[in-house]
Amino acid sequence: MKLTDETGIATAERLGVRLTHPDRAVTPDTTATKAQLVDYYERVAPRMLPHLARRPLSLVRWPHGNAAFFQKHDTGGFPDALKRTPVAEKDGSDDSYFYADDLAGIVAAVQMSTIEFHIWGSHIDKLEDPDRIIFDIDPDEGLDFDHVRSAALEIRDVLGGWGLESFPMVTGGKGIHVIAPLQPVNEWPLVKLFCHTFAQRLEDNAPERFTANIRKAERKGRIFVDYLRNERGSTAVAPFSTRARPGTPCAVPVGWDEVGTLKGANLFSPEAAAERAASPDPWPNYFELSQSVTAGMVEAVAGPLKKTVPEFKSSLAALSAPPSPASPSRRRNR
Image 1 (cartoon, rainbow, N blue to C red):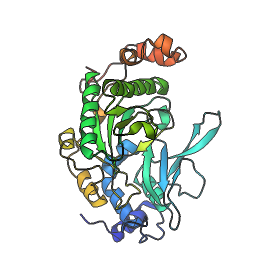
Image 2 (image 1 turned 180 degrees about the vertical axis):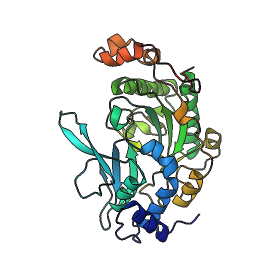
Image 3 (image 1 turned 45 degrees about the vertical axis):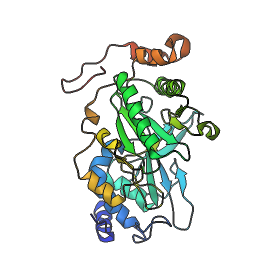
C-alpha cells in the first residue's frame, strides 16, 4: 500500500483544511511527507477515531526547522476543524485543550506539523471518570524485546485474574501498552490507586524483573511498569498514531496471539499500519465490554478504602452502588 501526496492533498481539500507545504518531510529523518500523513490518517481513521474522538489531546509537533515539542493547550493558529474545550486545572483555572470529532480534526493537527496524538483516559463529557487503564511496559536499556513480551503476557494474566480483559498495543517505540477498557463509573484517584498498587504488587512478587519506581536508577535490568498514565491529565499515545522517531513508526493494536511472535514494538511503518487497519480488528470486543474496577479489587490490592482514601466519598458511593443493568451482549467482570 503506497501513500501519496496527491491523495493526501485531495483529502485535505475535501475536508476543507488548507494544507501548506504538503510535500515537506515531517521529520528530518524520514521521507514521509505531510500530505502522505494525511493519506495515512484517512486510511486508519475508521479504526483510530473510536479510540481518539472526544478525548482531550496532547500533541507532539515538529514544525520545519525546529525541534519537536509537546503541546497540551491551544495557543492559537490552529484550524477550526480541531476543536477546543475548557478543562479545569489544579489551581482552579480553566485552560483550553484540543479534541477531535472527526478526520478533519486530525488533518487540521497534521497541517500544524503534529506527528503524535496522545489521549486522555477519559472523554470530554466525563473528564473525572476514566474509561480505560493502561500499563506501559518500559524496559531498561539493554533488555531485549523478549522481556517486554513476557511482561505483557504476565500483566494480561494478572488483570484477567481480577476479571479485567485487556488488549495489547505496540507503541512504535520500545514497549507494549496493556490496555483494559472500563465503564466510566469511578473517579481518577481510585483508579490510580488500583493501578499504582497493582504495579507495586508486580514488583513485590518479582523484584528481579519489575519495578514500579519511575527513577532510572531503579530500573537497572528491570521492566518499569508505568502506571502513571492512569491519573487525571496524563496521556498515552493513541492507537494508530505515528511517532516522531526515525522512519515514522506507528502505534498499532495487535492480538494476544501475535505478541509471542513480535520482534519489536516499532516495526509498523505508516504503510504497514494502514494495511493493518484494513484487516480484521484484533480488538473486536473492545467496545462491547462492561467491566470496571470494583471496591473489592481496590481493597484487595490497597487495603480498606475507608482508611486509605476517606476523602473520595463520591467514588466510594459509586463503587458500592449496584451495577446498572447491562444488555445481554455486554460482558461483566468475572
